[in-house]
Length: 233
Image 1 (spheres, rainbow, N blue to C red):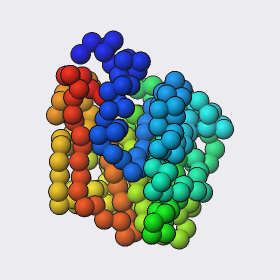
Image 2: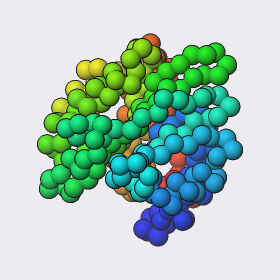
Image 3: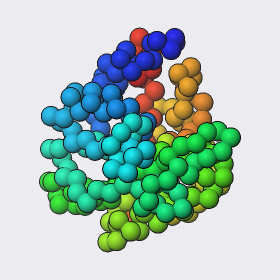
Image 4: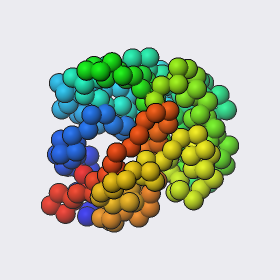
């Protein structure tokens, strides 16, 4: 694949097809550009509620955002909060610093209510640090944030690109509080590895996770690695 084939302006039509094919009720997004936020909203706002948070600004508006998209006919989203991966999760910081670059990292979370049943659950999405020191130093932030914004102990789902493999200490810290749906689901489909670098159809390594706890239960796990005309969505 050439880099041109994977430019957002070219790739987004493949992504639209992928989202529609997967039929998500709710999903988290990472590294959403300002342009992509506009395009996603224009394309899907009739079906999905969309919430974006950029850790690069105090007010959460801007580039490289995390996002939550959910079917408006199925869920209501309320009590939404943002956080940063750093010494104080509630204060903006550029704490992912080191040899791999200097980044602002964070996430967003909220309470979703299933309209048909009234069942509520907590949903959190993040994009993890690249530098090793930050991965370990701030691995406890997620549990801290979850306990603050899910005080009722509702079923809890935590998704994202964590930039670590399952053999990493950061994974162990997170998996000490949540459970890994890939490990626990009795049905698995697609590929195990989630990072493909545009060149590995079966994936190169597993760095994206769907964690759960407090009464949630994974029925099946699928990482959809469908290509469209040989191109990645």
